[in-house]
Image 1 (cartoon, rainbow, N blue to C red):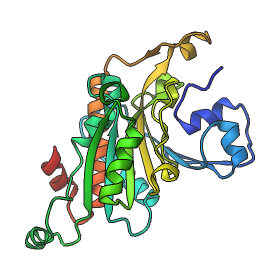
Image 2 (image 1 turned 135 degrees about the vertical axis):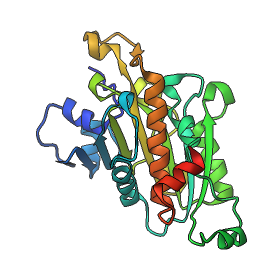
Image 3 (image 1 turned 30 degrees about the vertical axis):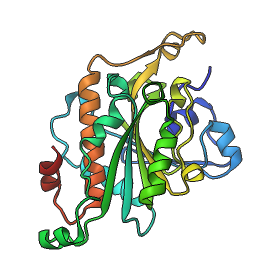
Length: 274
């Protein structure tokens, strides 16, 4: 069956192999790290060379409080993926705000603490001299803008010269159990829509010239996976998709804030954006 997932761990599982040359898998405390180290590994599981870190979390459907350890855990994972001396960051929310299952990226942007416009003098007066410069943008979708998300991000990057881009997007899974219970981080960039067969321009260090970290949560699963019929091209979402995307966006946005602004407490950051 065609690979219908954006999750590297599912791509590895679907290969039905316990060992693949060029791929290593480590699992500990609900965190699975899939490392694709060469072109053979990339071909075998259909993912570019890089690290893919999958975090299992409590379902966002029942989520009431992100300050239960998950926020610190995900922020730490993101920090370990960022390049050294990363002080100017562009956060890009990918997707369509008008389609709930595809609204994770735009909703996440609403929780990102943007700071690039804060002057050095104001930072000094506020006591936040070490505040990292953060910009946030929602790219929209090709059908609305006529412009590829990768082209928008590259145009902005050419002006503000970020040291890193963090791209957030909704993902497709091949297992309904992973919808809203999984967060994937990767340092390989992202190809928006690949899991649903709608490949767009790649957003990666190769295309932008700066490191790209991608973060996503599965929000859809193919009916072909559920029914076993290869010719099915439909995707379904949980009925609680509104809460899933909202709470997922909150966790991702706050993880970005906590990772980038360690001098400000989690609660104060949430007060600024929540």
